[in-house]
Amino acid sequence: MAWSKEKVKAVLLDILERAGWSAGQVFFATLLAGGTASTVANLPWRYAITVAISAAVSSALLTVLQYVGRITDLSFWPDLLVRLAKTFLASLAGSIAAAGVFDVTTFNWDAALNVAIIATVTALGKGLLARERPVPPATTAKQAEREASPSTLPLETYNEATQR
Image (tube, rainbow, N blue to C red):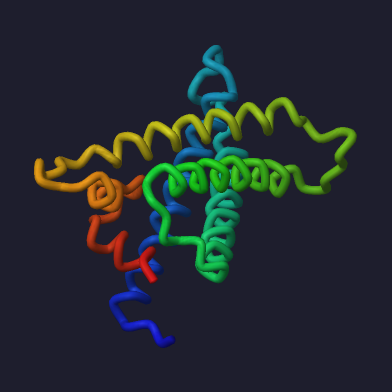
């Protein structure tokens, strides 16, 4: 089955949107996990940028795998759960990638898990806030679920990307 130009554009925008949000959430979580007692000059800026870029790449790869596996036409809650799992995994992968030489025994798992949990909670908030769209009164429950999206893309673009 060949994809139209509109479908390809929508899928690329979806991958970019997910990777961008993952990068932002992980960047914020990394700085937040750096501690509130830090001054702006002492925050781990370089590390946060490295982890954020690694998380964006991981998120893009996981989203491509989701499209290859044809696991995209999901209603709101399953889609949000997949996004949360991918954010957690992308954040953890970003922390591992930023560590350089990875040694499971000396890796700072506490810091990596703190960043992953904070990023996942922010992803949950983003997904719930993105869902808030007015639903017409004559809409059935199934139609309303299709009208709900954890994406910040326009609903038409999101539906074009995720529907088969």
